[in-house]
Length: 398
Image (cartoon, rainbow, N blue to C red; front, side, top):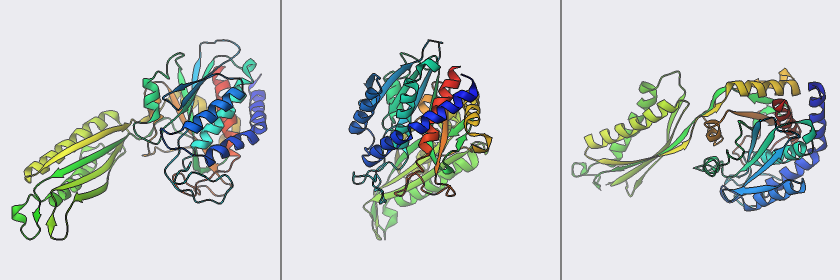
């Protein structure tokens, strides 16, 4: 089958499967489950794959793995990943498929990712005579919650037996219309570490501060000083964000200086070496200021997701396949993003391509944003999403 015939065939099959893809997506959207709680979701995925004649196995309790072998072994193994968890958001929608689980919603499109990969699984499984090699399907739990389902699956051996040489994932992107795709080679999404700083001093009467070690004042100096890490220590060519999003005291009032103040924040960057150096600077600054002002600090920096790196060669290949499929006018070059994704763990292990699937309604890019109670998609995006991933696999296998 030549390229033009393969392209037409994938688009045709994805259109045929669109009704079923929508059924999958709406069921999952209506029954969202939070990270590490995706029990019914996992069962739904297993049942669907088994109805396609495929065998499945569990990993990390709610992770589902399946293997599809082409008509012959060409030595290539590629993994396709979809995340399955929802967010703790109350949906604001009158749609018939709105969430029935109070305070839970597929507001980040993981229902779309899962529904799309289910249809890709069916398409590839029913067309083994058209491609060679091996495809590993990864339906991954807990992308939204630290430490991330990807890290757990990797520890349990998801990248072994068979070991994929490359991995692909797609993610909804309301900033692009359905039918469009976004790509970026190299560093794409930031690392994300969490900071928990406890300032300790000596509380007392606000009218007699000389008898205290003022934790509010110490914390204030720390908050200001930490901004110097980005403005005066970071290479300006390396995007970096240090945000302190929460500060509160234990006790305290207009006339009471508290004994403890807690500061919480996030640190994000695109350079793993600088990431390590910056976290040590955070510790040094906090300790130095607290000690100089008669107090002390306890610092807990939780290592979050690493930098997501799209392998340049592999990503350009997948981008070229997308261009063949939907035309150059529907391929968008994207900037780096300081948001984070646990797909980054896979990208640190094997060559990866994480691309964006346009989901906006026609003429409304930027509407229905992710992580909002109003999030929704133009469901024809499922057709292009299924066609794209299937076509990319078959082209790559050739």
